[in-house]
Length: 148
Figure 1: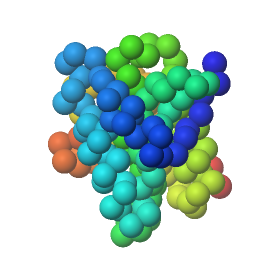
Figure 2: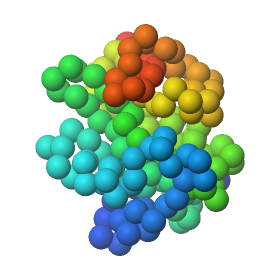
Figure 3: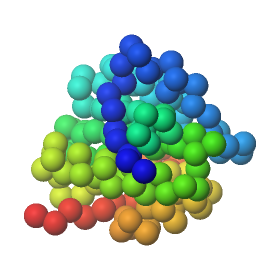
């Protein structure tokens, strides 16, 4: 298993848009087509990436920096319904965190999720994210402190 984060390109954006969540998860994450558009029109503050295992597309992520608040965010993380429960989410999160550390001098990386998404919560807590006590747009905000 070799997980990589790849640019969204003319060659792969349609496949990324067609990735699906498992039944009952649809309300947890915005559709990938919407997220790709959001990143495209963010003024360079959000970065869309396809998640691959070797040459197989398995998921999508969007991450970036909010210059108004000086906060780094993992805005989206989704794994295709047929690729879930294989350890891809944890591995992808590690790559995303590494990229955010390289790109921005934040002291904390933030991520938000629906309060009923217990799978996401468990994953983020295993990685080291902790509840910040913040709620944004109805979602819990967790943070990962970055060592200087």
